[in-house]
Image (tube, rainbow, N blue to C red; front, side, top):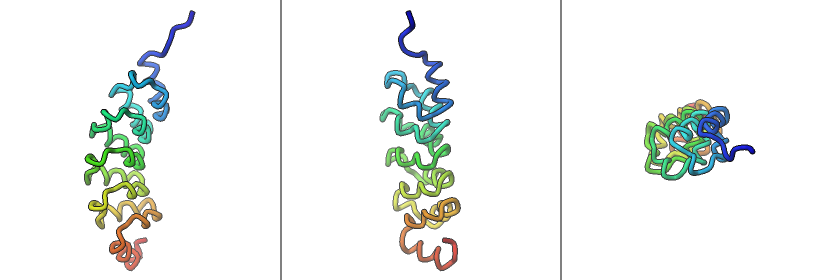
Length: 136
């Protein structure tokens, strides 16, 4: 007769190979170690991290370093300058999830470096200055 369920080591190996496999790990087995491995493999796995763990700044930083668009799943209170800058550095399209008050010239320039389409998320006064300077 076969055994029921997988071991923690088996789940860990699966999320290390494909972070999005976290969605198939039972909630009771989604430990910090497994969730951290998942977001390091694919930052978008953050959407499958239990809500009570999403307040872990290390987990969120690793997620946006892996995939800038994971910023969408970072709780608003954690979306500080450093984390948001890391996200737009990883993927300029993440600018759409950066709080308005953090969308300054440096943040927007970093986003536009890798994603010219991020211009749509640049505040209007900056958008005009980027266009005038030929940076967009």
